[in-house]
Length: 277
Image (cartoon, rainbow, N blue to C red; front, side):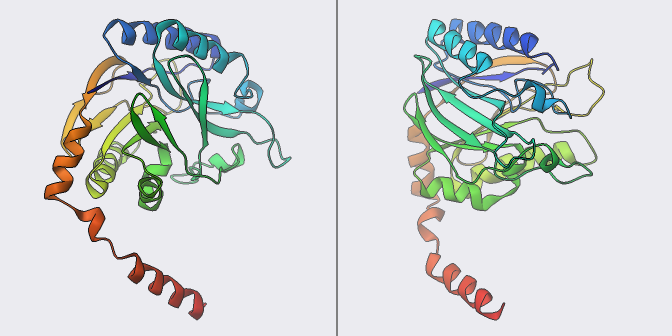
């Protein structure tokens, strides 16, 4: 069993406030026996035109302080931040997930591939896309990292399976709107079901002081059969859940859909489409 803390926190525009919230949540998670804590997307600061001013390198003060807290509490962490560096020379930053082990060492960074240019939003005006799916091993689990809008793309989840992931971590700052909360809950369960995969999904809690719509809560743990083992609802919370890797083997013995894939067929169709173009 792996004990995981779902850290559903509100996110302020002030990085110092957010850092204190992370530290407090890590203390609560460790006191309840968690060995891995998962935080939302964009824990550094709220989405907005000012993210470039707050963005830092992954070895900057914010992630360094989180790493110090992870080491102090001996707990691994997955957390979202904004990474500076102006990758394309146009003032944009990366929307980056960092993975820290229980000693505070940075094991992986995942830069969000699919940017939220939907429902009237234009994340790509502020954020440059990443290009590489990432799987990282933490606390005995090989975690495929997925950020918010990425969850709408099943091909990314399947690529993570092919890289050896045995669980998904989905971090989000999901925005409210017509059908949006239903989309979130359905998509998280779909990624779990179609890949027979434990899925750890953690979103921002609503911030009552914010005027935007980011953060609906609804952080979830979904098992490989698609059963929701935990749903945190809309309020801030730190809840510890357990993952049993043996459950994946039991489900896949009954539902071996991954082994029934036909990549030869998919490739032939794709090649035919390329030929026609």
